Structures are given as structure tokens and as C-alpha cells.
Length: 263
Image 1 (cartoon, one colour):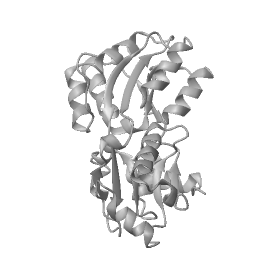
Image 2: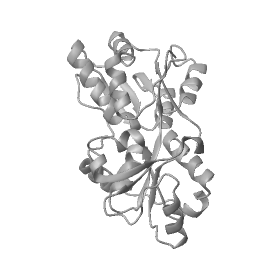
Image 3: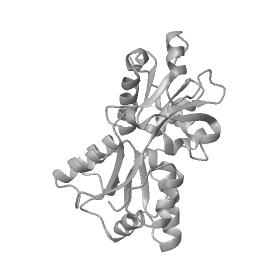
């Protein structure tokens, strides 16, 4: 069975890693952006640049794409949804909950990442993971929950492709989202895990371990799409437009995202 941690230990360790799971501080009437947790550092930086340029603020809430989609169906007052998998936007649009089909804003990648001092080595073919599993030397290996987190879905697909999914079942640790998976992977209580490339590149995270990109043909692409929700106001519209501007695109590229051309 997958291992879980209590919430107190999750948030204490997450704070030490510089990871956050709730809204950023902003003015009370600022529109709330529901953003996939792989965007945590990139979109925080973009939001700060947006405020510096326009004087307008947005509130950022980071979490699992699947959980956000459920909350939107339940009436959560988000004005923008930045999903890690465009299928969630398509479903919400079909249900009449977004203004339109939205825009593809990035394609993400996954990496295997191991904490400093781990006995596991980060190699893109996962050969060392296979060897250590066979020797019984893996005690915990973290991914996001594939039931509702796209980065967990892609991690599971990659591990199935590599033939390691079944062997990992007794040691898998599931994060509620990919930020929590990163916390688990780098906490020192695990040999490593599969997380978002964008998190591995973040200055708050990268010094804490090493990583290797997992071949992108091992899993379905992480086509990430955003959409305005029906209640979006002028500030949300302005931030949505800003995400397509060169300044925002440069930040996204710096965090390892592949950007669409003219979509």
C-alpha cells in the first residue's frame, strides 16, 4: 500500500523546502488563480512582475489539478484555472464552466530527483532504481497521487513503461500534488522520487538534490492549458493576457517549460 505522512510533518518539511500550498498574500479583493503546483515558483515570479508593471494583484492558490477541477464544479470562486493537463479544461468547458476552450500555455516535463546524500542515483533510464529495487534497497519513493494529479499520472505511465510500477508498490509515497511529492522526495526520508522539472530547477529546490530528465516518450505529454472561468473580472483578464507576454514566457522557459507557438 502507498505510504502517507501526517499533515503536520508534511507542512513542516514543506516550509523548510520553501514549498507552499495555499494562496499567496495579496489584497483581499484580488482575483484568485487556481494553479497547478508545478507552477508554484514560476507563476509566483510572473505574478510579482505583473504587479510591478500594472499595479494590479492576483492571489495564487497552488494544488492538484484534479482537486481544483472538483472545487470549480462545487462553486469555488476562482477566476483563472491553470491546469497541468488540458483534459481537465476541456471537461470543464464542456460543462459550461469556462468562457472558452482556453489556451495552451506550456508543456511540462518530469524528472527523477534524489536528495543530497541519497544512495540512489538520478539517471534518466532509471537503471539504478531498478537495481536498488531488486536488491531491496529502496524504502520510499515519491510521486504525486496519480488519481488526481497530472504529474503523478505521467510518473505512473513512465514507471509502467519502464516496467517498475509493480515493483514499487510497497514503497511508493504519494503526495497530494507534485509539490508535496517533491517535499517527500527531498525530505531525507526517501531515496528519491519523480517530480516536475520546473520544481527541480527552482532555486529553492535545486541545491537540495540532483535530477535527470525522464524520456518524454515514456508518458503522455503534459500539455498544460489555462482558461478564464465565467466569473472572471478585468484583473483576471489582464493577468491571463500577461501570461502570453514575452516577460511571462521568458520566466516559464527559465523553469524548463516548452512553450507553444501561436496556439
